[in-house]
Length: 478
Image (tube, rainbow, N blue to C red):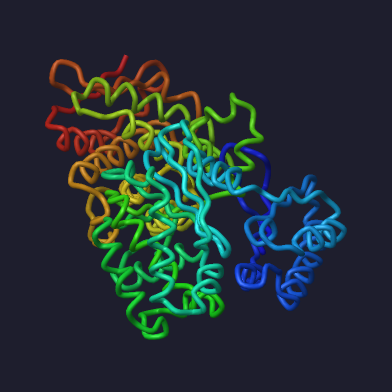
């Protein structure tokens, strides 16, 4: 049971409140055909609290959805009627196909150019569906949710393995996952990802778009299935009620990897809920880039001049296109995000602006950006504040990016250091002070009243950037 309140219905909706209750509604449905009385009691109590919180928050619209346990149980309709009276809204009981589609839309809404198979593992079922870009295939639903599998197998992992093998054999479309991504949606798989992060000493604790090579995920799944969950490092990051389900989730993942043979397992923090919200958006809003939408929101909330961040995007466009530095479209959007976020740390003490900006960006609730991309944006803004020496930089964060991305982050950071000395973070200056590479020289043009902004400090920063790209620095005044 989960309540998520969002700031608004936007391309990148920001949660302002999030609470879950592990009621275990799907615990006995497969064996008894019924929702357990004690689970119903916990669930209805949670809904009463959730409805009160919605009223306290002032939620203007409330959507309620129910999944496998409620659609499969004989007393599901009776439970839904009671729940609707408490929630004061209609509850949509999702079919397996619709649940799979909304899960896929959750990936479409939160992943840059997705390509692979989506697997949404809940308590009662596993939904599988193919996604490539905006295109979504037909979905399949299987009774392989953690609670359902525990119930059917009578808590026998050996029996559960036979069930998983038989059920997955009925989904021939899984073989189309070879060499692509497998997008893992669901709380138990996110719990596995958090454990993997701790086991490997991973520097970021953001689960969304955490990527594990398939072979490594397979070995980790075998480990989790083989040992007592309580012996795993930092198992306390997983809720007590979810720990018994880890082995079942690992078992399902293990067999999915063996059959589909994906390249990477990519964890998603977004799924059915966000897919539902995405489906409600206008087509024009759906076309927006969610990473840039989030960066723009943070730019508005925390920068001295949001307009300056937008001008910085165009200013660096001109510099990059003239520089001869190759930049893909994917890298360009990351650069734009960094430009929009370049000034979000200005209220901090100067000695800590770089560190604070890096931490905010590295751990922000951004979507449609993988961890190397997230690290690149954070590093570029870090270099913009502290200079290009990386003595203060965590080597673990630096290791998240390739040598190419680190080089691009340094160049962008150095370019922003020039821009902010020219403009003082104020709008209307950068469009009239272009910087570009011309005939082998890096030229910064200061015209009219901006000519007086020339000085030794500005030239020193321009020279620093010029050295990075192998050019001679020149400031032209007129």
